Length: 402
Image (cartoon, rainbow, N blue to C red; front, side, top):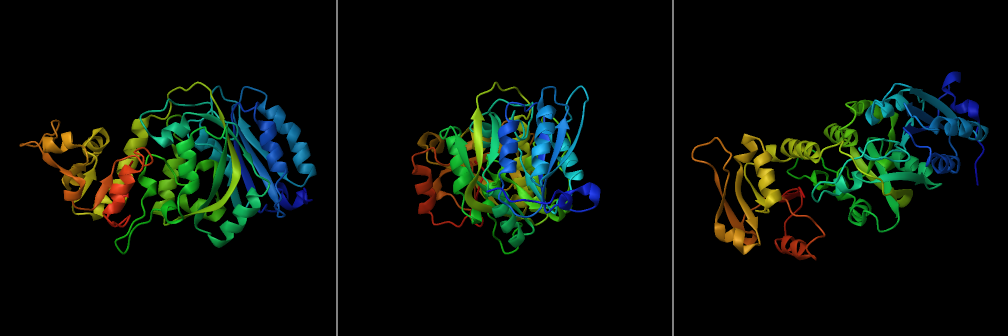
């Protein structure tokens, strides 16, 4: 049942402040906006809400649809703030989100958005990019999607935010069709509370899921946080096309000591539309950011380490490391007897003389800590069983970089 609200209580023009601002950047979203805005109307949160829309130079009927819904939403007590520009081309998702936040008034921010590179309904991006390799983050970014909120989303995430004021609050998601990006959706929904967060270790420990290729451990369409904390972290990167602004913000959030909390209910319908992909965010860009963050947060405090995977991904990580980090690699380890029998990996592109020759060992002969460059959930449980047999502690003895 829709709760009655007082529009004046949420109007920035009247100097009053909404409790929650729903942040909605828009670019050419006409096919999805009706269902999106209906889900805003159906929220059962009984505090004051506003919808802050920023139009990033849409060329379709998006703004006509929003103007139509503005009347309906404000009649129900949800104030609507609309901004935008009509330049020949969009200025990007980071810019649009920053503008939508700047024109809003809420003490809390609820993002209706999607990962960088999507042609989506709620993030309303025009840019997509082709999936590269095995990256689940790439897999998620290569799809066009629109998102619809469950009626209890704002209420439950607001309750969680009250108890976690320095956290990004996420939630579980549902996919439609259910089997689209199945591995990614399973990863998003099944991470334990410990695996959601990487923190600067003060006692030698570090939780590690944010170093994987999957991207932020709570995905952007589900983000909810206080305005105060957002302001503390800083704005989204406004580099535009090709910039993974959500990943950059997430890393900065962690650097500032932020937490991550997930409401373990499916509060967002994350719908898949098979649209053509074009190159925008390059996989190499994501890779470079991940390597830098791994070096900053983990490898800087390790004196030596082993790379688990003597194959393509493990060698690529080794070559991508800075000289200081690369010098700490004492071995590769693997289960492939052909690689192990070779005995070593020679870094042919190195300018060092003699060129580095890194031993390749069976994983039982290698010593921790490990950087794991092996994809989870792809070996029928064999890798997970091998790792478990060593009785290691995640964060202290290994981190994932799969």
